[in-house]
Length: 162
Ligand code: GDP
Ligand code: MG
Image (tube, rainbow, N blue to C red):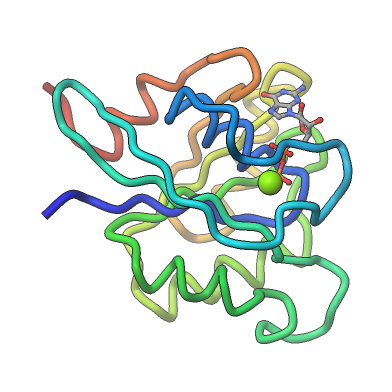
């Protein structure tokens, strides 16, 4: 079985940017506008000879009240399908209530999840990592998807060292 990695998080955290970098495709819709990528999108990638499937998701909105509204069905489905979840948060924006609700859901589902603080290029790494550690899903890892920073350490955390 090919492992399945889902990218989840609220709009604009950089999920599609990371998807494109991992799959080296431009197929996922990357936009400056929140919520533009509405459906799940699958891509193929490989890490040190290990093929895997990446799921990009849209439709998690931070505006609504409860977890059901917060996470569109497509995203919930992607989490269920995934062997591991990369939970993206925005290092520049800091921790939000929506991030906490997503973290709660991942903990309840007992998912193998990694907190990935994207846009570390615009943030103080130490301050950020403490803030996102409080999500209770382990040590956050700072990356910059747009610049390819820390992508290999992230994949090593997911797949284990060579
Ligand atoms: P999504 O809604 O989670 O899929 O987010 P996108 O991938 O569409 O990215 C939202 C915005 O964040 C775009 O303007 C990206 O260029 C920007 N972005 C993505 N990754 C980074 C990063 O590492 N650093 C910075 N500064 N901006 C980023
Ligand atoms: Mg997107």
